[in-house]
Amino acid sequence: MYEINEKNELKGVIVPVITTVKSDDRIDEVSFRKLIRLLIKKGINGMFIGGSAGEGPLLTMKEWTLMNEIAFDENRGEKYLLSGVSDTSTMRIKEKIKILKGIGYKYFVLTPTFYIKLTSKKEFLRLFGECKEFADDMEMIAYNIPSCTSSILPVDVLCDMAKRGWIRYCKESSGDLEYLKEVIGKGDEWGLKVLMGDEANMDKGLLAGACGIVPVSANYEPETFIKIYRAAVEGNLDELYKMQDRIIILIENLAKAGTCWIAGLKYAVACLDIGLGKPVSPLQPLNKKEKEKVKDFISKDRNLI
Image (cartoon, helix red, strand yellow):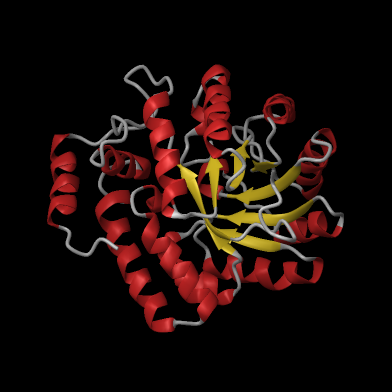
């Protein structure tokens, strides 16, 4: 089911799917299925379920499980399917891995634990080592997103995990371009590849050697990100920079529309008749003025790609 390419290599555009919810923060199944079907139809390479864009750590275990079941059912083995298992302790993470294993997932994405910050190499290796051992033949992807975890995954820890055969991939969302380049450069010796989530620098990251991109704005407009990845592969710099300019426009008008970056993206998708546009509590939804601004951008925009 998962032999999507000869070497089963993750690459291309992997969309961190937003999770559409109802007014009570329970999964809006109809809208969630609609979004997944649309993304698959548009030609994306894979989906990342329940990450920061998917608000996975904010859901109850029941809703988190339902979210993953729906995504697995809709995907039907067509695209790479990753799921985030991040939580506050190793025990909680193992519970999520067990659920994913039962559903049939191959890939899980793991950040350092949060609430209590990890500070030593031993703690990082203990967390990732125990989870990898527990997961058996599931593939673990390390995820660096210090804005959510308050911990930066040290480059030497990532390289050590790759050397031990625990990981082949790192999802990098720190927004630190120099850190990204260091992971790509030093990780190459051990076969470590990088999926980047920093939309503001996707042109630079792809040129530096990122094997794929994980852009939240692709929920609204996947075509632009498919084009920028293709341009990087083909070495078409004019197209690459053109698409990056488009991405900056999306960031400015959607991700920066409100006080919470996910709120603008969810509302933009709602304007496409998918979901209510509501982030999970306690995240702040757009106010009336902010909604009008997003609607105005969408209605006046003549550069949709």
